[in-house]
Length: 429
Image (cartoon, rainbow, N blue to C red):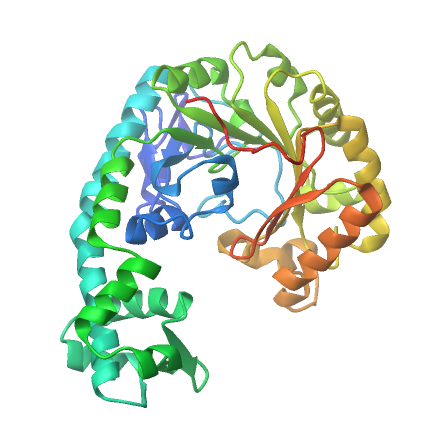
């Protein structure tokens, strides 16, 4: 069956235009590749500090230097109910059905667009201004004593846009400088600041010590102009791209580390890689074939067998490996399933095992429809505490040490074929 978005072995401009309202950048002559700045890249640009970094920080990856990308944006052989990255048109097929762009051309275009995003869409001035606005907000609250303030009142007093006030307030709230009251409609100054700080200069010292400084922000933006890590994980199934080995080599030529996140259904493609990523992620969505089919809705035959073939490669592959369980409450993380997962992980013997809560965002918001369920959305959403409880039980039963937790990302990392005392940070790049 013909797809109107693929004509003469190329993806059409009509397909690209569906992404114009997103932060995706479709790149390359044949339009099958993309980059997208993630939430944590902006958070790192905002402060420059390690505490505004994604879960990959445990591996030494700075979010402001991470290039989130895919060479296979529109192609995937799964239709996972938990996929949140499939933003607009969905998959254009389970095969890579267009002429592949050359890896050097793709990487050059990725760099060009990345620099443009940093310079023009996430500019340095925005975050230097945010720094001053945060101090203005705190000083205004301090000088007006004990009381609560909403976004509009702060906007009128500080004389900046609502968007800028919200950005500053969110960061101050996340760092506990201010606290929400009345169901997040108003905010008040933290009592420790109210009782112990007397001047704007002292507020500035506090912000510099506990949150960020202009020097930190400038350094983060300077670093961001030259990414040193490629997260090949943005959308689609990356191993469908027929020149993946050359793409890894091209990133390596720029002294970049690489992560590939694959659904594991293409073991032959993994075997064929002449150049391996710094770390290979394989998604393990279920402990058995029936649940795999329900959650991943594969568009290929023998998907579960192929996934297990890929897992079997990990014990002998010469790059670091990680098996990721994308966790969905009331579906694939029941404690009764833990022995099944342990058996799979012991057999695969990766360096790491990770439990990561799925995200209610974009297409994942349609999980009810995909499952033909009458449950509420949050029936499937795994809160941090729920995942922590599950992870502690997994550690107890498996003996694999839990070596890292990230509350914001709802991420839990276990050492499997890895010395728990050894730093997991990458040393190459």
